[in-house]
Length: 379
Image (cartoon, rainbow, N blue to C red; front, side, top):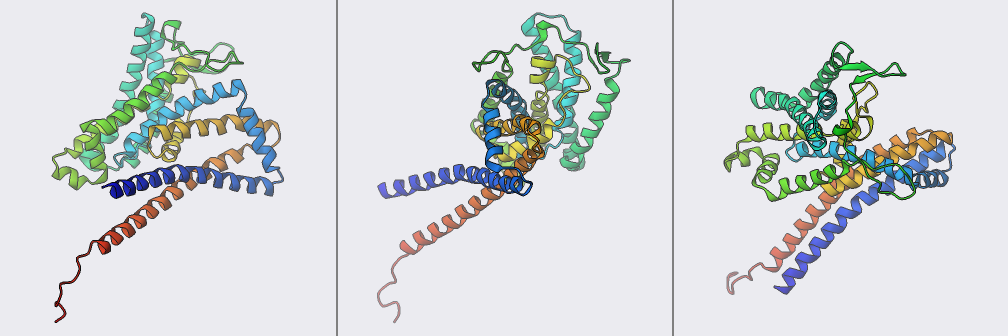
């Protein structure tokens, strides 16, 4: 028994070591590729990396990194929910932008006590995101339409609907002092206050970071501690096996898309309720597609996603200093892409190594435990 326990513990430790080593090696490899590109373009690699690190270590930059990582984290969670069931919700970008627009319009029109005002605005965003994502879910379960195609098309439709709604004839008003237009500003009772977390700066961390952390905990509990999460993961592994065990696959597909869209509806809330207080033409785009990369980087694990979101935010924020120093900031995009590709390759190699190691272990145990031939059997 002791020998078995030792072997099991050794395999667990090896698996954990490989799981940690894979992303670290991928990041190191991405750094080497980036350094090579910097050298070929005449920029000193070590000085450039030091420049990024020094800028990222400043107090104000740390706050900016945390705030941007908060939105990235929520976006990646929305994508990861679909990934856990082999559903590719490419429509997070359209879902969060449409949800933020309508939530901003509702929040700007309401007059309610502070907690209730914030709660209603958030619920509107969740509802709009879930409803918009449910269209792709319904198309898949009723007509067999691929969610990849439908969500991409729904992104385009959401962009058109948003442009139609964001006019001065409908939900928008002119922003004083500029050519911009946006929804009516959300009053103080509907704003989500931030707080001072990093010493040395007056910049505040989004209060919504607390909601993001709770979403990560809820994500873990849902997928690892509930029957629904087990059914969802089982359906993602094998639909035929799930059906045989009594799971309603169509219902799971639809619910998963709705939950993914509901979380996507929250992506714009840190910015809307914590900084801009209005949805305008310059509201941050593209957060949904960034979430796809971060979900892949974090392997759909809430802790891994958090680390990936912080890394991505650090690179995005630190890239500004490169521009000021005359170094092409596009080098950061190259580094981000290399990291994602490297992590995917590294995890695939680790997966294959584990399979080969398990096959060798089973082969050794079978040969060790094989019964000895009976005496006289040859005769």
